[in-house]
Length: 303
Image (cartoon, rainbow, N blue to C red; front, top):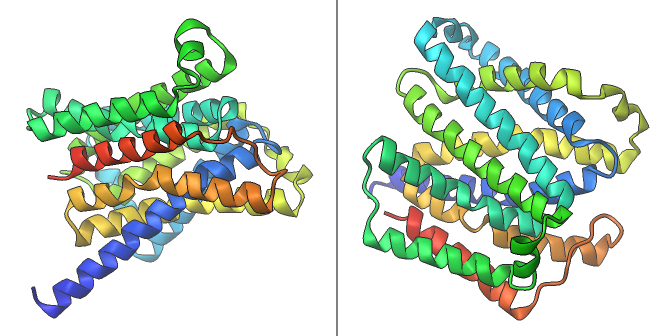
């Protein structure tokens, strides 16, 4: 491998790891921020800040106006993609509000699996026996992780169960977004697609948001909101750059570690800031389940 290719690959690994860290910390920041602001206002600020920052970046590169070349047919698909990502953001927030960061990250891991299965049925992509075995690992991992709550999840409609249903729905609509974006990316740049979607989200959630809530934030709340807003742009930017330097399967394998990062940061957060977030202590079976789920995810996404 040429030296330049090795350097590019190493940079890709660092970018993928950075994205994993950002996405691993995000649910903790969002969960803490819910104490200060409602889910709709948080989601609106995330979309608004991402659209403004991305517009500035594209304007500096003199690429912003190429978005107006979208055809009428593709505009319809773009609206569906925007609805999918908007649904993902708010459904995830509503689920996180009723569960905890570790639970949300475990359940949301089914989103790339749904994306792959959608590719199998819609785009006739291959799904090998090894990947099906990985799917079995994921189901086993979920059962082990939620072993203490399985009866509650399947027999009652508690707030915790509703939260899980919200997160499952978030994973499904994200897969819809991903499948449509995959088709649109053949014709348009990913940044231009995201600019339209972020702007769409800012407009959709504005009537539901209460922007004045930002005036009540203390310094902790301001830092949390800033982190969550920047995370949206930085994580997706790092993800896109990593894909440009590495195979998608390798990037996805690194990103599959996200739930473990979340659990690690949750442990550190509760140790140093016990009043910021609360979560149920993990049992030995839950820990085994988290590693089993991550292993299954890596098997599925690795080609």
